[in-house]
Length: 102
Image: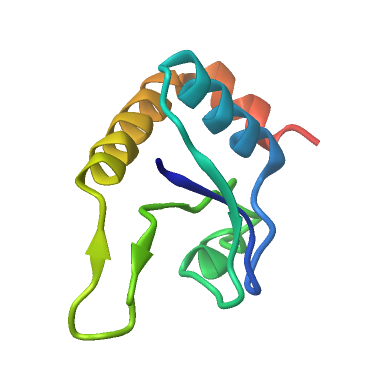
């Protein structure tokens, strides 16, 4: 299933957004993985934009990612798309405001 990144070397994800992604995955019956990444991602820059942008990395588990040929499960790809669609559908104005509340 989709890989929800709990930590990478460039950022710590927004905890409320992470919890929302997990809630959406569970409500949709999508199996997911909680992962850490030893490198960084583009989210490391995005989460610092202006006063800060709630950020979360959701990836597709892939082998040999830095080689000429990578391997992934089609089920993981499809479930990641479903999770992202479900998450976006939940991001109404009230929810987004809750992500940025201190």
